Image (cartoon, rainbow over all chains, first blue to last red; front, side, top):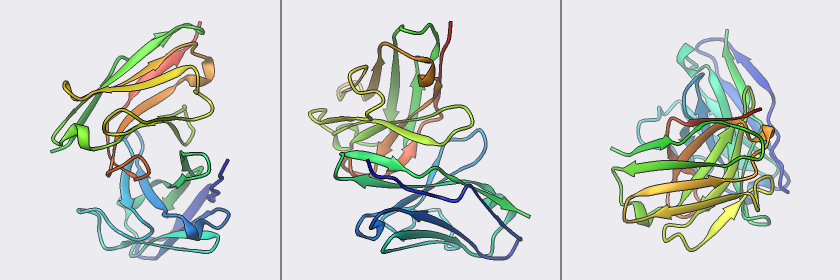
Length: 108
Length: 120
């Protein structure tokens, strides 16, 4: 089955830019979605179809996807961005939704 | 406002059964696919199952296929997950989620989750 690999953790200082990667075999040919999950809360969709933002998500959140790596970029990071972030695709080979293992974003 | 409210979670012995329900409101229920996603303690998200808006198409993760059944009542606006032959590794918070459109789309709204604990 299809596998998405994320770094377990990323740390960034406030005001700087955080980049969280999601690697998969030819993931650039798929549509990647990103979720934010804060402790004790349900996930929230922050990026869909590689780079689109749902209403209410700040413009600081952006995404890109090419070849074997999709990237979630958070600009001007704030303390409130500290959370776990998950990438997700639809795998047509298995007809499954597939999630990455998640990345814990720490704001220093 | 889209609202998803799960119920039916609890403690069950290995080999037992449980049925989760998810009451939906704030959108035209029968026009959207729905998903169940779970999260084991301290672990990441795991997709469990999905169902089309009509209920005619269903999908399951390999880990639950043959044991879990997803269904929906489009008159009552309720999504279900029937879980049989439960195992310790099924212990998790189970989230009901609305798909953005069809079942290949992302989950754009999530419930708060229902805790399922499988233990003797």
